Length: 228
Image (cartoon, rainbow, N blue to C red; front, side):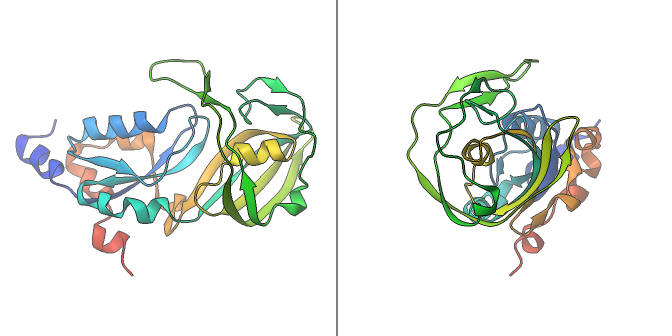
Protein backbone atom coordinates (compact mmCIF):
# COMPACT_ATOMS: atom_id res chain seq x y z
CA UNK A 1 0.00 0.00 0.00
CA UNK A 2 1.26 3.48 -0.86
CA UNK A 3 2.25 5.78 2.00
CA UNK A 4 1.04 9.37 2.29
CA UNK A 5 4.23 10.77 0.74
CA UNK A 6 3.81 8.57 -2.34
CA UNK A 7 0.14 9.51 -2.68
CA UNK A 8 0.98 13.22 -2.48
CA UNK A 9 3.71 12.78 -5.10
CA UNK A 10 1.26 11.09 -7.48
CA UNK A 11 -1.36 13.77 -6.89
CA UNK A 12 1.08 16.39 -8.21
CA UNK A 13 2.27 14.29 -11.17
CA UNK A 14 2.23 15.68 -14.74
CA UNK A 15 2.70 13.79 -18.00
CA UNK A 16 1.26 11.28 -20.45
CA UNK A 17 0.25 7.68 -19.82
CA UNK A 18 -0.26 5.46 -22.87
CA UNK A 19 -2.82 2.74 -22.16
CA UNK A 20 -3.76 -0.29 -24.25
CA UNK A 21 -7.51 -0.31 -23.62
CA UNK A 22 -9.17 -3.72 -23.97
CA UNK A 23 -12.35 -4.22 -25.94
CA UNK A 24 -15.52 -4.26 -23.87
CA UNK A 25 -14.82 -1.39 -21.49
CA UNK A 26 -15.84 2.25 -21.91
CA UNK A 27 -12.91 4.67 -22.00
CA UNK A 28 -14.32 6.86 -19.16
CA UNK A 29 -14.17 3.77 -16.94
CA UNK A 30 -10.47 3.45 -17.73
CA UNK A 31 -9.88 7.08 -16.78
CA UNK A 32 -11.89 6.73 -13.58
CA UNK A 33 -10.03 3.56 -12.53
CA UNK A 34 -6.58 5.05 -13.17
CA UNK A 35 -7.44 8.28 -11.37
CA UNK A 36 -8.75 6.41 -8.33
CA UNK A 37 -5.99 3.79 -8.22
CA UNK A 38 -3.14 6.33 -8.28
CA UNK A 39 -4.78 9.24 -6.45
CA UNK A 40 -4.41 11.58 -9.43
CA UNK A 41 -5.89 15.06 -9.19
CA UNK A 42 -6.65 15.51 -12.90
CA UNK A 43 -6.78 12.97 -15.72
CA UNK A 44 -7.97 13.85 -19.21
CA UNK A 45 -7.58 12.14 -22.56
CA UNK A 46 -6.42 12.78 -26.12
CA UNK A 47 -9.41 11.29 -27.91
CA UNK A 48 -12.26 8.92 -27.11
CA UNK A 49 -12.41 5.25 -28.08
CA UNK A 50 -15.60 3.20 -28.45
CA UNK A 51 -16.24 0.46 -25.90
CA UNK A 52 -16.05 -2.25 -28.58
CA UNK A 53 -12.67 -0.97 -29.75
CA UNK A 54 -9.30 -1.72 -28.22
CA UNK A 55 -5.93 -0.05 -28.45
CA UNK A 56 -4.23 3.22 -27.73
CA UNK A 57 -5.83 5.58 -25.24
CA UNK A 58 -3.73 8.65 -24.45
CA UNK A 59 -4.23 9.78 -20.85
CA UNK A 60 -3.19 13.30 -19.91
CA UNK A 61 -2.20 13.72 -16.28
CA UNK A 62 -2.09 17.07 -14.51
CA UNK A 63 -0.59 19.90 -16.58
CA UNK A 64 -0.39 17.63 -19.64
CA UNK A 65 -4.07 18.50 -20.15
CA UNK A 66 -2.83 21.79 -21.62
CA UNK A 67 -1.92 19.75 -24.70
CA UNK A 68 -5.32 18.06 -25.06
CA UNK A 69 -6.25 20.03 -28.17
CA UNK A 70 -2.96 19.13 -29.85
CA UNK A 71 -3.42 15.41 -29.18
CA UNK A 72 -7.09 15.41 -30.15
CA UNK A 73 -6.22 17.15 -33.40
CA UNK A 74 -3.59 14.59 -34.38
CA UNK A 75 -3.91 11.94 -37.08
CA UNK A 76 -4.88 8.39 -36.15
CA UNK A 77 -4.13 4.86 -37.35
CA UNK A 78 -6.23 1.71 -36.90
CA UNK A 79 -6.38 -1.96 -37.78
CA UNK A 80 -9.44 -4.17 -37.62
CA UNK A 81 -11.90 -6.42 -39.42
CA UNK A 82 -15.08 -5.75 -41.40
CA UNK A 83 -17.78 -8.03 -42.78
CA UNK A 84 -18.86 -6.78 -46.18
CA UNK A 85 -22.38 -7.18 -47.54
CA UNK A 86 -24.28 -6.50 -44.31
CA UNK A 87 -24.77 -3.40 -42.16
CA UNK A 88 -26.19 -2.47 -38.76
CA UNK A 89 -27.73 0.70 -37.34
CA UNK A 90 -24.61 1.36 -35.24
CA UNK A 91 -22.13 0.35 -37.93
CA UNK A 92 -20.58 -2.29 -35.66
CA UNK A 93 -21.33 -5.88 -34.70
CA UNK A 94 -23.38 -4.92 -31.64
CA UNK A 95 -26.04 -3.09 -33.66
CA UNK A 96 -29.28 -4.23 -35.24
CA UNK A 97 -29.26 -5.38 -38.90
CA UNK A 98 -30.46 -2.79 -41.43
CA UNK A 99 -30.70 -2.83 -45.24
CA UNK A 100 -27.62 -1.93 -47.23
CA UNK A 101 -27.40 1.73 -48.27
CA UNK A 102 -28.63 2.58 -51.75
CA UNK A 103 -25.14 3.51 -52.85
CA UNK A 104 -22.16 1.60 -51.51
CA UNK A 105 -18.67 3.09 -51.56
CA UNK A 106 -15.87 0.99 -53.03
CA UNK A 107 -12.89 0.34 -50.72
CA UNK A 108 -10.62 1.55 -53.52
CA UNK A 109 -12.36 4.92 -53.32
CA UNK A 110 -11.61 5.47 -49.66
CA UNK A 111 -8.84 8.02 -49.96
CA UNK A 112 -8.47 11.76 -49.62
CA UNK A 113 -11.28 13.99 -48.34
CA UNK A 114 -14.49 12.15 -47.44
CA UNK A 115 -17.75 13.42 -46.00
CA UNK A 116 -19.05 11.41 -43.06
CA UNK A 117 -22.21 11.37 -40.99
CA UNK A 118 -22.07 9.80 -37.55
CA UNK A 119 -24.55 6.91 -37.23
CA UNK A 120 -27.86 7.80 -35.58
CA UNK A 121 -27.26 4.97 -33.10
CA UNK A 122 -24.21 3.73 -31.22
CA UNK A 123 -23.48 0.69 -29.09
CA UNK A 124 -22.47 1.52 -25.52
CA UNK A 125 -21.48 -0.49 -22.49
CA UNK A 126 -22.40 0.95 -19.12
CA UNK A 127 -20.04 0.54 -16.19
CA UNK A 128 -20.86 -2.70 -14.41
CA UNK A 129 -22.99 -4.01 -17.26
CA UNK A 130 -22.14 -7.21 -19.11
CA UNK A 131 -24.16 -6.31 -22.20
CA UNK A 132 -24.00 -3.65 -24.90
CA UNK A 133 -26.92 -1.26 -25.25
CA UNK A 134 -28.07 0.69 -28.30
CA UNK A 135 -28.12 4.43 -27.64
CA UNK A 136 -29.94 6.97 -29.81
CA UNK A 137 -27.55 9.85 -30.44
CA UNK A 138 -29.93 11.87 -32.61
CA UNK A 139 -29.39 13.36 -36.02
CA UNK A 140 -25.90 14.46 -37.04
CA UNK A 141 -24.67 16.79 -39.76
CA UNK A 142 -21.97 15.90 -42.24
CA UNK A 143 -18.34 16.65 -41.51
CA UNK A 144 -15.15 16.37 -43.49
CA UNK A 145 -12.43 13.84 -42.70
CA UNK A 146 -9.29 12.91 -44.58
CA UNK A 147 -8.10 9.36 -45.28
CA UNK A 148 -4.41 8.92 -46.04
CA UNK A 149 -4.52 5.18 -46.50
CA UNK A 150 -7.14 2.42 -46.41
CA UNK A 151 -6.09 -1.13 -47.25
CA UNK A 152 -8.30 -4.24 -47.21
CA UNK A 153 -6.66 -7.68 -47.09
CA UNK A 154 -6.49 -10.97 -45.25
CA UNK A 155 -9.95 -12.49 -45.75
CA UNK A 156 -11.11 -15.03 -43.15
CA UNK A 157 -13.45 -17.32 -45.09
CA UNK A 158 -14.78 -19.01 -41.95
CA UNK A 159 -15.85 -15.70 -40.40
CA UNK A 160 -16.60 -13.94 -43.67
CA UNK A 161 -14.45 -10.96 -42.64
CA UNK A 162 -11.62 -8.96 -44.13
CA UNK A 163 -8.74 -7.32 -42.30
CA UNK A 164 -8.11 -3.63 -42.91
CA UNK A 165 -5.69 -0.91 -41.93
CA UNK A 166 -6.54 2.77 -41.87
CA UNK A 167 -4.61 6.00 -41.48
CA UNK A 168 -6.76 9.13 -41.24
CA UNK A 169 -7.25 12.58 -39.78
CA UNK A 170 -8.83 13.30 -36.43
CA UNK A 171 -12.53 12.69 -36.08
CA UNK A 172 -12.83 9.88 -38.60
CA UNK A 173 -15.56 7.46 -37.48
CA UNK A 174 -14.63 3.97 -38.59
CA UNK A 175 -18.07 2.45 -38.01
CA UNK A 176 -19.59 5.19 -40.19
CA UNK A 177 -17.04 4.30 -42.84
CA UNK A 178 -18.11 0.67 -42.53
CA UNK A 179 -21.73 1.67 -43.17
CA UNK A 180 -20.72 3.62 -46.27
CA UNK A 181 -18.88 0.54 -47.53
CA UNK A 182 -21.91 -1.69 -46.97
CA UNK A 183 -20.06 -3.47 -44.18
CA UNK A 184 -20.18 -4.12 -40.45
CA UNK A 185 -17.23 -3.24 -38.24
CA UNK A 186 -16.38 -6.46 -36.40
CA UNK A 187 -13.25 -5.37 -34.54
CA UNK A 188 -11.18 -2.21 -34.23
CA UNK A 189 -7.79 -1.48 -32.69
CA UNK A 190 -6.22 1.98 -32.57
CA UNK A 191 -2.48 1.76 -33.11
CA UNK A 192 -1.38 5.39 -33.24
CA UNK A 193 -2.44 8.90 -32.18
CA UNK A 194 -0.09 11.52 -33.60
CA UNK A 195 3.38 10.90 -32.19
CA UNK A 196 2.14 8.27 -29.73
CA UNK A 197 2.25 4.56 -30.61
CA UNK A 198 0.49 1.51 -29.22
CA UNK A 199 3.93 -0.15 -29.10
CA UNK A 200 4.76 2.07 -26.12
CA UNK A 201 1.48 1.52 -24.26
CA UNK A 202 0.89 -0.52 -21.11
CA UNK A 203 -1.98 -3.00 -20.96
CA UNK A 204 -4.83 -1.72 -18.78
CA UNK A 205 -4.84 -4.85 -16.58
CA UNK A 206 -1.11 -4.54 -16.00
CA UNK A 207 -1.50 -0.86 -15.20
CA UNK A 208 -4.02 -1.65 -12.48
CA UNK A 209 -1.58 -4.19 -11.01
CA UNK A 210 1.19 -1.59 -10.85
CA UNK A 211 2.18 -0.46 -7.37
CA UNK A 212 1.70 3.28 -6.77
CA UNK A 213 5.43 3.58 -6.07
CA UNK A 214 6.15 2.30 -9.61
CA UNK A 215 3.50 4.31 -11.44
CA UNK A 216 5.74 7.30 -12.14
CA UNK A 217 7.94 5.12 -14.37
CA UNK A 218 4.97 4.71 -16.73
CA UNK A 219 4.38 8.45 -17.05
CA UNK A 220 6.05 10.18 -20.00
CA UNK A 221 7.16 13.65 -18.81
CA UNK A 222 5.64 16.62 -20.65
CA UNK A 223 9.02 17.81 -21.95
CA UNK A 224 9.63 14.45 -23.64
CA UNK A 225 6.05 13.72 -24.71
CA UNK A 226 5.66 17.03 -26.53
CA UNK A 227 9.22 17.78 -27.57
CA UNK A 228 9.35 19.67 -30.88
